Length: 185
Image 1 (cartoon, rainbow, N blue to C red):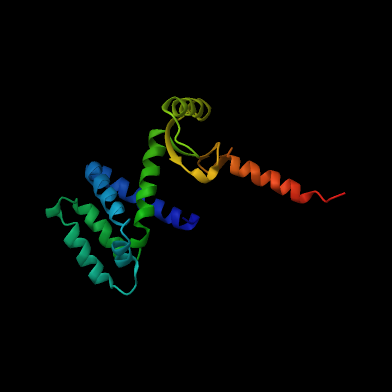
Image 2: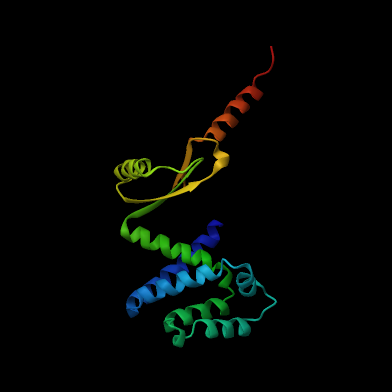
């Protein structure tokens, strides 16, 4: 996601969060946003809301049919979706959901750390990593382990904008680059 798209999504997420808290409907808005973001994983649904071939009026009708108050969505959430449709911003809804989660994490003093490894990490290893990161960052750490066989070995972890790559794949690339630099004598 581009930095601009992320910052625009963050403004929308913070606005929705503030109104949801003010109206006392935070939990129901949270659930509705997660549901809609999940729906956007479907290419057909995402395509419908992202295309300019479908007019705003049709998109608004679809929103009202799917997320009316009768179906349990809070009115402010339905209004939020209508506003996104009117402003041509429905395509960034998944980014808004991601930023909503980040805002919540920031407020809670929590950092999510994706860790990629070639093989599944065992629970004691995950716990040790969580403890080390929590001590050094002085925040609550949520480890998100992912298996990425192409790493060959080692692991890659990301903390905010910082990426620490201790994978065998990257080490081999560095060795190869050094060997390519040296000219035969």
